[in-house]
Image: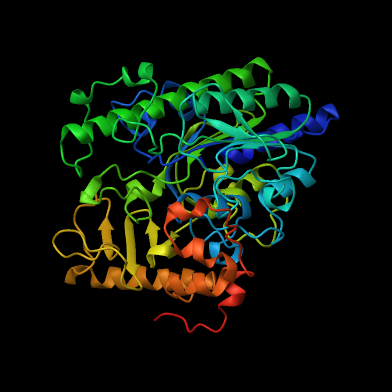
Length: 504
């Protein structure tokens, strides 16, 4: 990354200058922007030669670009639960999509910010209210501290200007953006910056693209001007996908959606510059998980797997007042984002946080502070670890889906990403890799023990922790989650599962 004393010197310099002038250092603002279903390789700054992302690439040059940011549980609701609580899903309840995260279970991210005097704003996709997606989120504990401005659509798959909507501040009435969804959400975020420019603020903007949706173009429809940026016949596809016209249209649409959020991001950065806020605002860009984009023949599966294109996401952090630009090999997972950002901001990290505060390593320019990150997705019953070189996962129970062609169990994988960046050679059953597999399995079990995860089949977990009256919608197909169901929990899963014997 950079010299070991770089970050400390910059930080101390700022503090000494403030002390000499008799003024306290200004508290930094926070602008946290995240897309939905965008792998790390879908940005120009991460080496993609085709994708057009000039504004995000500019952020990468002006800030710190992380080579190893991992979505610990690479699916929408589990990611959001970990981001806003700093806790494993078995502690806060966001185990799978459309379960409601427990309120009042420690001090959550926005609650820390609110209690420290920050004005909080949240715009875009929420996906934490559970059950029926066709509901607004009422003011109160299920906004988890976003008590100032909160304009979300909970979770929808309609991005076009004719249908894209949000619920009003009271969570009661639908309002149309009258714009392509990311443009409307960014406009709301910019208005928030204008209103809060004179006081510390924390803004969270959650775009739904480039997630596949109900539009055409193989499920990745984008405005026509964005689609025209890409010639599908000229795109360089991932080596793990079949080269067909359908796949090329999907990649064209996906890249067009990414260029659309890049364009919106540029407007938000212009607003910070216009208001003179850029220097002392921590800007973060990342994504909740990746998109398989038909890799490995697993269509239509998009996420929920240990492969890098599912779990590895971009992470760009810019703070001109304190962070020197560069790249970092520091391992950062979803669970680490809340404590790390609070650490950077000089705010207390709640004792309930289970991730690491890596702000000290980041400010000091150290890349070696973390050896491994936990990987897991409880609904598909696999656990694993990600290290700087290897990816490992193991199926604790037979998955509900059939193995891929060739008979390989989908979630029993071991990859050496240094020798095999595309993760096409599975070493799980390789005799020469037995010792390595044993080490990674031991790390997996250690993480499970740390989080109180006994490895129980997720179907049994759901039966034990979800309220009985809500079980029919949770266990049924996704289409049934628009019937008014709440998908509430009876309590903390770790407390309700104490009698389970840990998996070997």
